[in-house]
Amino acid sequence: MKIERFEDLEIWQEARELCKFIRSLTRKSQFSKDFKLVGQINGSSGSIMDNIAEGFDRDGNKEFIQFLSISRGSNAETRSQAYRAFDSAYIDQIELDEVLNRTERLRTKIKSLMIYLKNSERKGNKYS
Image 1 (cartoon, rainbow, N blue to C red):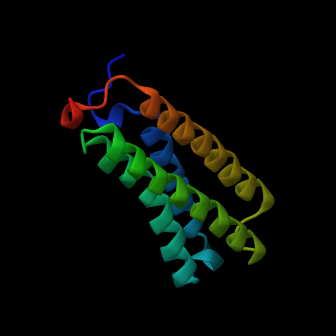
Image 2: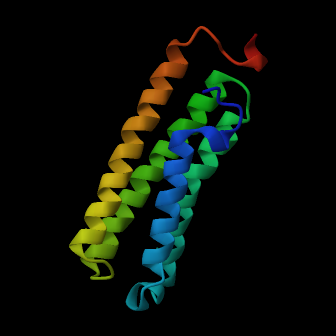
C-alpha cells in the first residue's frame, strides 16, 4: 500500500485513537474539573497526531524525523500526565493501563519509523 497522505499512516491513526480515548477520560466528572491537567493531557495527546501530520507534509525525511521526535516527546508527556490523573484518582487502573499500552505501542512505532526514514535511500522530494 502506498502512503500518500498522513491519514494513511498507521501511527497517525493510532495517535488519533489515543487522542479520542484521552478526551473521553477527561470528560469524567472529577477529571473534568481539573482544568489545567485536562488542558495539558488533551494538548499533549493532540500534539502526537498533529506533529506526525505536520512532519509528513514537510516532504523531507530530515524534517519528518524532527517532527516525529517531537511527537514522541508528546507521547511521553501524555503517558506521564496519565499517571498524574491516576494518582489524583481521576482514572482507574484499567484506564491507566490502556493509556500506558497505547503510548508504549506508539513510542515503539514512532521510533521504528524514525529509524526507517533515517536509513531510507529516498529522502523526500525536498532532498531529491
